[in-house]
Amino acid sequence: MWCQKFLKSNIHKVCDGGGKLILVETNSKDAAFHFSVEELFTRYIRKNESVLMLWQTDKTVMLGNNQVAEAEVDLEFALT
Image 1 (cartoon, rainbow, N blue to C red):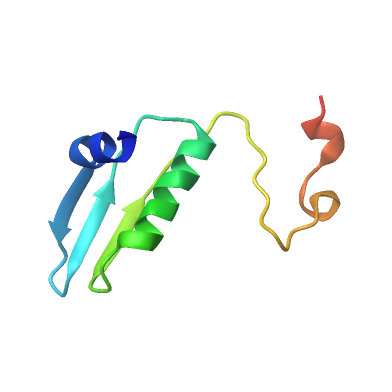
Image 2 (cartoon, rainbow, N blue to C red; image 1 turned 60 degrees about the horizontal axis):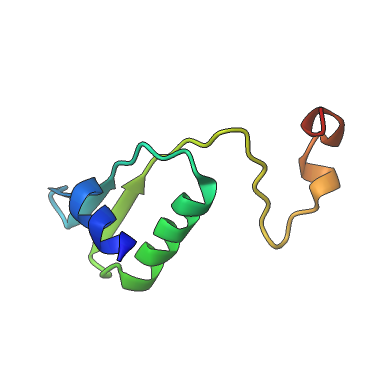
């Protein structure tokens, strides 16, 4: 399973004094991969743990459910 391999090689638990901090490191620039990892953490993270995951993507436009593309994105620039 991809998530087991990912968790073993990219997750580092760090003590932050009051609880646990999970530091996520990845070299992937695939936005779908990062969203799936975020969902994995939202489902399985313990309440006393925090997650820090910094990631970068290739050229990508990401919109949430309540966002309107025309209001959030320079469509002329994005389509060039």
